Amino acid sequence: MEKMASELAAKDDYYKPYNTDSYRGNMNTSFIRTYNGETMLIEHDVSSHRPYSRIYQITGTEGMALEYPLPSRIAKGDHWMIRR
Image (cartoon, rainbow, N blue to C red; front, side):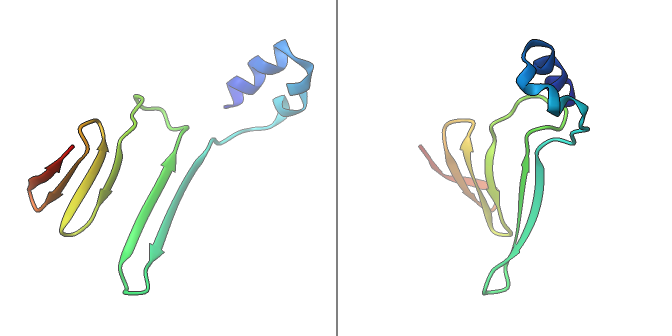
């Protein structure tokens, strides 16, 4: 993001105030404990160096669901149950 701010500042004066900052990107990791004592881990990371991926995945102790890559599907244990 720091490189992007520098490139934008070189082209447009509007971005010059942002060119002096050090950026760490857009990343968040959250743990959520439900009323029933379940724990969820939610990760949002759009700035780590890695290949592009749109994997929307929910996993738990008894199964998982994937929305992308298509087709969307749900698994219980080690078998896919629903494919759309």
